[in-house]
Length: 316
Image (cartoon, rainbow, N blue to C red; front, side, top):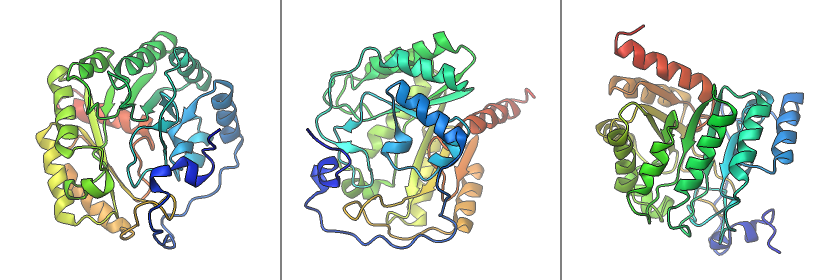
């Protein structure tokens, strides 16, 4: 039996890579260990519903803060990904078959947690003909049925090996926010995200807007992987050309010595400069801080995103 707690079994594709030194984190990166009652209650609900969270699987530094407030990002379609991106701590390998009862369990957990906004993500499932698109749609519908007042944000794979029509399945289920992360600048894709294609991911987000112009779109990148400022600004321009509404930029943190090395820790002042530039390029919403992650403060950010759209349209 494979033990995903053992690094060599969790990341067999990285086992033979040379170790990369893990530099000491600067003061602005450090976070407190989770100890609150709210954290424990959220953990209990996740376990009772046999759910996987990206907070745990990806080793998110904000898990303590988010879980203490009853927020968790649900990760559907299992805990094993068919891709082996060099930055990611999700386990790689051959996934198990889909669980038909999972959408209902996610909806039950959302109701128990009383969430006003939920983020649902998944592993990449290149083994499935539709990449898991119908499973996403079923999960969205289940949450809508159980918690009609909850807004739903999805963070999807790229559906690279699927027919273009699978995207229509997900968009037709009407999530409030469609998020797909570009992760890094195009020049680093062969090294950082080898199983993906930059312009395919960009086009995916553009097609969401074509299918439903009212749907909010969102994407994010990490910095500290070896990119330069010019390439980050080019990604911003590419995103705006694809009409992406919401941009997130966060610091890459190296999960283990076998993962991609941290090139540098980007200073908070540089993040502030990226945020200012992004608003200048026309994004409705920007979150750019060292600890920013796709779903960090997602509920509050969604409320601001909606307000910003109304303000832009002169409706508030």
